Length: 343
Image (cartoon, rainbow, N blue to C red; front, side, top):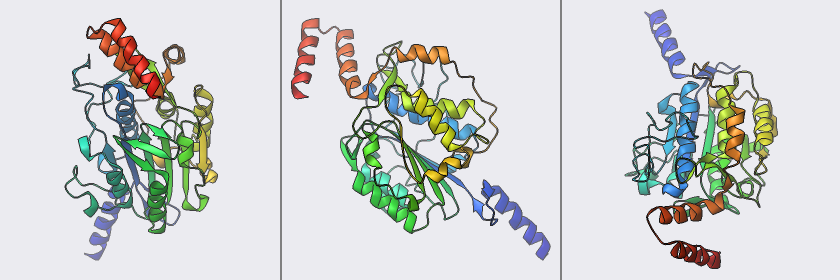
């Protein structure tokens, strides 16, 4: 009887853990995916996060270990020529299909994000489905944010997530042993400013779309939709994970490849650089994907011809939409002049 109970416990242990470490401790992959904006002009942020979800699912990370935050006003937006669908690149696959969203609408706030990271379920009571991280000391964590940013601040709808508050949450997570290692990918303008002074001992390796002074770039803009499909840095890291054997590719190799491919902004790295030697699969899932795609470099390079700084996209889309809806060109020109005066 004792042997039977032992075997049952062993089966349960194997089913709940993604794999074990050298000390035979169960390791589970957790992920938090955050789109920090809303509105058709910001299509790319929710598109990025939807695709990231598909990447992780295809690599074997369980849905119950992925927490997704996105406003969810794109797929069924009246401006969407493909109702119910979201694409991250022209002629791509529908990345919105089967995405399980945990927090949407006005529940997307800095406080909600911080509570998720710190495992504070009480703090998120009445918001979304109230899911928060339940990770333990042996687990790995992948965090991805796509949205707007400025120096030491990330845009979360109309509010801001400040660097000091993010650092306080990361410190709390480290001190309370909520993870073993963390990989944090950040897509925003001036994103490098969020991770200066990141302590290596916190066991976090962070990669940002740009440095602390320059914008990140949207890509595949104004093609068959009046907005940008995605962001260059984000599409690059996801393309890399989709087309390479991430069970053998290291995080450092992925960084090097993405750094080289992201020609519009200077990709940066921070934190514990020893994690460059880890396999990408350690954070993004170790399943051999049957959905591995070939990288169409020619099509991607064509997309570079249709890119623009993230800070200019909202105005561009607003003016194009105004023109599409019949606003006189003189009025569109006046809108542009008013925007120029404000900035």
